[in-house]
Every structure is written in C-alpha cells, then in structure tokens.
Image (cartoon, rainbow, N blue to C red):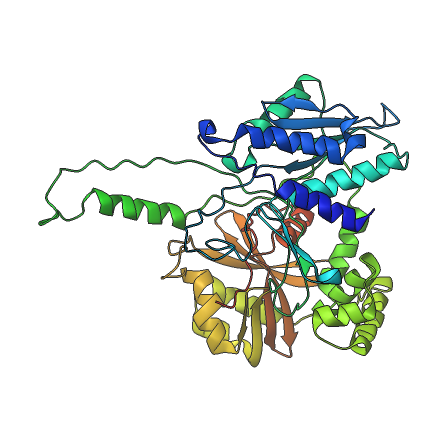
Amino acid sequence: MDDALAVEHLRALIRIPTVSRADESQVDAESFTRFRAELARLYPRVHALGPELVAGGSLLFRWPGRDPQAGEPAVLMAHYDVVPADVVPADAGPGGVGWTYPPFAAELVGDGAEQRVWGRGAIDDKGMLCAILEAVDDALAAGVRPERDVYLSLGHNEETQGAGAAAIVDLLKSRGVRAGLVIDEGGAIVEGLLPGVVGPIAMIGLSEKGVAGVELIAEKRGGHAATPAPNGATAVLARAILRLEAHPARVSLPEPSIAYEPRAPREAAGTLLSQLSPQERAAVVLKDVFDFSLDEIAGTLATTPNAIKAALHRGRGKLLEPEVDAAPVAPAVLDAFCAAFNARDLDQMTALLLDTSIVELPGLVIEVGPAAAKAGIFTGTLFGCPAGPHAELPRARCEVRAHRGEAIFLWWLDDRVDTIVRVAVDGERIARLTSYYHAPEVIAEVCRELALPFTTHGYHYWSAS
C-alpha cells in the first residue's frame, strides 16, 4: 500500500463537506453526489465491483468469494456523512470556532511518521472508510479473492440515525444474506486513556450502545414568574430526568452468534487474568500478539527494556506451566469478610484488611488502606453513592466461590452477580481486593463458566479531572 497516496485520498474526501442533517431538506445533496463520484475516481477497482445505491445515498458493494459454500459473509461498515462544523464568525481565527485548522481543508500537519490530517470526518468516519477501500483496492490489484463473500456497507446518514444502514440490512435480509462477521466504526487511537500507559492505545469494542427517545410531559396549573408555585412543572420534570439518569438500562454482553470452540482461548485468557501480573500480561500481549519491540513496550509501560524482558520471561513461564497448585488462601478470612459484608458491618470488613491493603477497580480507582476502602468502594457497594446516580441500590450480598483453583468473591444484587472480586490474602488478613465491576468481559467469562446469572456495567476509565 502506498501510504502517501492513501493520505492524499483521505484528504480529498475530507474536503467534500458531506454534512448530514436531521432535516434532509437542508442537506447539500450535490456534495454527496460529488463524494460518490470521487470514490469511483480514487478506487476504480473497488468501483468495478458494481456498487448499489441504497436509500438514496448509501453504497453496498459485494466482493464475491471463491467458494459459495464457504459460509456466512463478512460485512465491513463505515459512513461518509459528518456532523456540522461550527459556524465561523468573521472575527474567528483561521480554523474557526473550536478548530485549529479549517474543518474541511484537510490540512496535513507535522513531519514524517508524526504527520496528522486535520479535518471534520478524519476520525468519524472517513478515516475508517478509506482504510477499508485502500485495503480492498490493493487486494483486488494483487488478484486476491476472498474465500467467502465480503460486503462493503458505506452509509450516508449515520450521524442523524438515518435509514441508510437499516435499508442495507433489509436488502441483504431479503436476499437471504446473514452476516457471520460485521466490523463497524469502532473507536480511535488515543493517548492518556488508561493509567500507567503512556503511549497510544486502540480499544476494541465488544458491544454497541443503543439509543432511545423518551418524551416527558408534566401538567401543572399555570402561574406568574413573580410568585412561582412550589413543585411546579419544571421541578417535576427536573426530578424525573434525574431519576431516569440514575437508573440507566442494564449493560449486557450477548453470547457470540457463531458457534465456535471457546475453551482454548478462554483458558489462555483465564491464565492471563489469574496468574500474570498487569505488567506481565501487557508485555506478553504486546510482544507475542502485536510484535512490539522491547523498546516500544518499555515506552508504552513507562519502564526499561530489561524490565520488560524479565516480565516476558516470567509471564511466558506461567503460561507454559500454570501455577495450578498455588497455596490456598485462608478460608476463615474470606468467610469472615463475607459475614461482615452481608451484615453491612463496615468496621468488621475493614478490620480484616491489612494496614497496607489495596482495594482497586482497575483503570478507575485505587484505595490504599482500610480507611480509604471504608469511605470509598465499601460504602458505595453496600449503601450506594449519596451524591451519585446509584443512591437507591438493592441490598448487596457476598459469596465465596472457587474458580480455576482460586477463591473469589461474588457480590450479588438481587438474583444476579453484580461484581467479580479477586482476593489476595496475607496471613489471616486480606492484602488486596480487585473488583471487576467495570470489566464486563471478566464478569461474563467467569459467570458463564460458573453457570450463574449476571449483569454488566460497561467500561469506565480513570480521568485526571
């Protein structure tokens, strides 16, 4: 792939202001027509696949596979509409309000590998669109033909929740096409997202947030602004909105839609989680999965190459010979903690912690010492957060379970596991508790293996603010 040419293709597409609007009468249809013509010019081999125009602006390409019996096709999705850029007043700077550079100028800034394209849609979502088309165009030029069909779905009104993508789904369904793999927009490569990671990081999304529209109506007797009635309509609405915010819909992680044999990757993931330290896990994944150099890993984890080399040696050794016979934790300590938890006895819970204990929600908060745990996570779990959106929690309970040779805590709310907590014990007291409340994949993995009902809460990351 010619990287410089790919960048110029992206810049050319960003310069076309394909702004979608809820009121389609305000959409500049000529820009969308011009964009589709530019796609045909920049990617002639992809265009030769014969795109279908769906719902007036979305595009559907079919890249035929070699074997019609190979199985369900893959769908690669992107969209080419963008949200409006800020209106630029006469006295604004060259980039306009909120813009370092004009939103549709596609300025190329920086030198060498540090060059960046600035413009509306560079990330959301013309960058993804270009990545798909560049890859497919290059593959077509090399004579590559996939084993099974691959569809390219390029929407034209995603930002306004328009009908383009839904119409493509309906079209494929009418033809009996059921996708085996769909790769959608996803996130971006960002920095400063996770504590302890100083380099750029790309998060892999496992699920997608839905959308719902709710109309609230409060009817009250009218009055005068000089003498407003107590508990007026606006106050009622305000309280209703706060109550809605405090009770978000449950986050769920559905079962995979394709049958597969999960044991090998699940066991490997379980070993990574349960027996490798965070540094060992990161080093093994970055080196053995993504082929980072020692220097790159050291830079990402803010340590030295020698420390990474040692972490790799330890981590790989644990994966080859898991420590299945590790010393058991003291059950009396865990039973005592559960009894105190279920009695909502904060003093007794914290008395079972070491003075140097750590209670952690990975990526969100670390509380050192019993007093911090009592005032923070313990109080929030048992009694809710008085100043936050979880003030009306049902009564939580704690249970000890064995999982892959390790004793863990299950914290239940009602009839579902709410949190998985790993425990480290030193003597007759607890040295560390690690709560995976904001790690839905961990909760789902453990509870499915234990055949328990569960709920998940999505991701939440530490913020300097």
